[in-house]
Image (cartoon, rainbow, N blue to C red; front, side, top):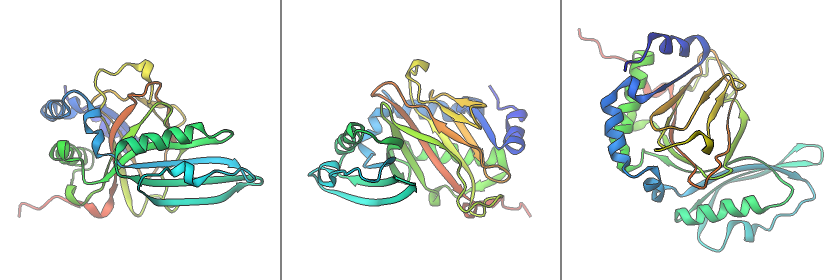
Length: 264
């Protein structure tokens, strides 16, 4: 299998491209498949963070001591602002010592009555996790080379191992950092799915441009969003199983993408 020119052109014409890693490079697909082994759940121990956002009535009280739990944690981010009259928006990113505490936190979130959940997922951020680090570098480098004919500084880019548990969600939104296009900071985003033995009944798919495009979380599937001309709306359909949806995500900084070295 080879990646079609139509797929490459689609990114620059529509702002979106979806394909499978096997179409781009079968050897990279096979190497990553072997490294993931029994499945991406084996990478779970790297995950220590949870990000969430919800809407609640302004007179609604949440017990923070109960919400965050008794074990050691760090609130990376916590805001409570007015969303509209009578409604607050709560945004939280919290870091725990292990994945089980992340799971417990998400379960407490789901147990809160009368909130409208907009975001909830577990993740690790920074370098790619050690088990698949070199493969992620090679795959993301190959994507930037293929679609932009440029070189990616892989080791200075930031990556997230994301895990959406059952009912994990990100609501419909656009990735625009300061409202300008082309984006002055970000070139594109790349999402690489890791789920093995996936069945569509498990959901967790990505919808792009008001459901015009859909990318199922099957192993090797890739979604690429370009920020040169477009800021496409997108969302994630909540997974239906506790196994959930795994992927590697990176928002590629323009500063980390350079022209190829001249031969002269």
